[in-house]
Length: 582
Ligand code: AMP
Image (cartoon, rainbow, N blue to C red):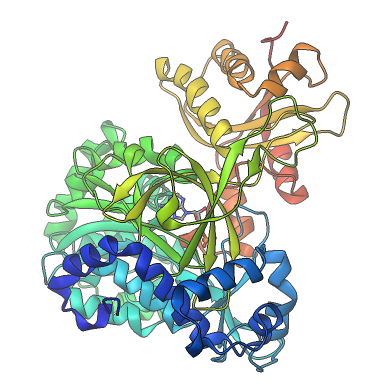
């Protein structure tokens, strides 16, 4: 029988992990068996597996039967089933046990939010992750976490983001009790529903407890960067509140006001200590603000890979010499892997798959024949493989079979196998699979765009300006179509430098389809639009206004959403056209 995490004490967690990693392949087969044993009587599995007697089939045969009979699906294929659950059909559709919670995946990578079944199991696997990173008992965590509003579906199920369910769950409380490390903010701050007010209170209480704070964290690094960007503007008000034991009138939500006020009392000496440091920090453009204000913090912990990588430079600026630890790899659908080498820089981080979380398959992806124009995206696929058969250096799309009713579900993430930890693969996160920029035969992924932007924005290094955020759009409204890249910049830059950045981006897309199309002018010159300060905040506000949670927010790197394009175009203050191809 595979090791059960509940049989282990906390201090044994590493031993548990070593055992499951050693026997990853066997445990995967057992995990699949367990999922089928729990759910073979559901409408969905019966449709594909028929009336099977699970107890009469050995585990390897069951795995073979499952992977040959159940089709690979995307979220759209499961939507009719999930919709029936949301509408109140409580028959066993996807899971034997009734689904009582639905999660909204952040959707900012795909453009719209998706419902995903969520159960206590989902919250428990998240808890396991936290146990891997114990802290010194008795401290505090400054956590930039935010719930969105939970609401009821037509059928009476509670819906909200996965992080929202998690912060409201027993598991979140258990995690704090077990690690004896408590978040600085009460639940009224986390679930306040207004991220600006919550950020203010997170920072305020983080400073009230500054000597106890052991580490600073958020789900995705974006939240930490946005919090400290806000801090640059609001620190004086925060100092005033600490000095007087009052709460700024900008906090208007009654429950948040009450909960935070109860934790405050006048502390003029702390306030003047912080104020003095802030004045010095302001002159240094807030370099190293985190260790300066939280002297006992040991590290900053957050997801810094994938679409968070563009915020790394700013995060390092705020963290100074404090170690930054790249957090694990997971999704609303399932948690996937852990960073077993926390001291590695985020650029080199890999995630060891935890074989008990779900049953994982991997679709090998091969780069397309470069001249092909018929492909819907950049890759051709081979047959899905189990975790034990993966090859180092190969790229794959992740496929999940979860305890929560997703069967052979394409997650849409592209990963590369960097190596193995005992028997389990270590994955590099590459990008979302969905092709983002395409006008005709050109195909550029989120990662391609990221590399191009990173490269050309280095030209800003010679100035005092920095890139705050970016997105893109493939404009096909006029012929020839062309790429538009939107940049928000902090600081002044010469127009000549921006023109050069624009040219550099156009010249840096190496996709053969793009290069050929640019040479023949079947794709027009790349356009760089500089948007005014605060534009990406407006985009964040738009998503949050539509129910997204800041904790899971990811700036869409390519958009054809009309509302976003309107915001971007209205806020554009300068335009440049590339001269790269003459
Ligand atoms: P959500 O839609 O909020 O559930 O976000 C899940 C998605 O975020 C995953 O499918 C990945 O695309 C991305 N993600 C999660 N963890 C990481 C990570 N450690 N590195 C890069 N991307 C990640």
